Image (cartoon, rainbow, N blue to C red; front, side, top):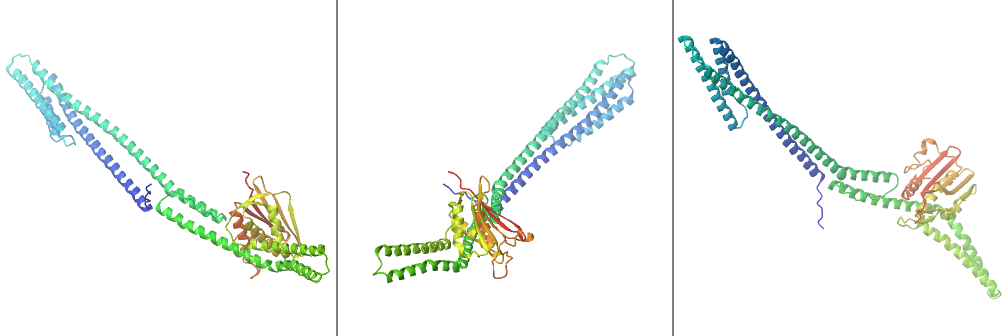
Length: 479
């Protein structure tokens, strides 16, 4: 399969520019040429019309001369015929050579015949008047009229033909303009189609991907056909997105280690209890080895095994929480996840804070349990830090948000958040804690984790009344 050659955007733009330019020049050239032809035809008709007017004037004096005689009428007729001959000799129009020569030659021939017929008639008439003889002059008069009529018919026919040609040219010009306009519109549609699929659509995909990143949904931009520059941009952005995902995972891991350090003292105390029980049971068993019966020995050994399992569970929970891994969504039951997370943190909950867990029914979501546990732990840590010097209650509640989403509410009775700070709590490095007591990344990481699951985070707070953080997650889709 041959690989499609990707042309750079600048070459495609240059090609489109030259295409428009050449098309425009051809269009202007065709229109200009037709315009010149139409102007020539108009000038031709104007000149032939002027020639026709002179012939018609001559024929008017011809009629007067035939009716009334008199030299003034004859001289006026010859004068107009002379002017007509000058017009005929000076015709300067864009005819084809054959058409011009045929018309001029035929017109001059008939004009000469008309002049001769007029002179013959005048000679016969003068002879009759001077000699006193009666002669039938009607044949000469008829010839006089016929030659004038044939000249007029020739010119009228020529005007009619040229007007018909002019009408055809104007009609053709209209069609040319229509087809040219249609062609330009088709070309514009083609260019718009190209720009949409090669530039606008890929940029829209990039814009949507950037919006998703700002909302916490970090994902690579899918392949979209486009120009070479667009493809290079998508590759660079996808590389940046992969690096961003890696950095975010590292940030989550760092936050886990921070939380793990916070939990260390409580975990050490919790491990100390089973270890002390193991030590005590072992000492008693060693001291009474020779005197205790088998049943007592087994009871001590089972007790030691139970404490060992308890210590293993504590260590396993810590290891599972601290282990770094890729984002892997699996079916997770929210109430179970809440209980495990709270169990891991129970030693850190101050004695003046009452912990309340509310769960009405099992709710299954498609989630990465470790990431979701980290998000819940961050919210609980924030609530406990807010209630550090204040008695109250901390409620963790799982519930249905609607038919498609489940929710985890973490509600405290702490001092609350000022309204001007409420819109900033999810910004990275924003914190209201004292210097050294917070990085401002806790809720930012929560926001990123929940958005990565396709959910959203809401926070409501009243100064002096407390704060509620709600993590809303899509329910597991039934197969």
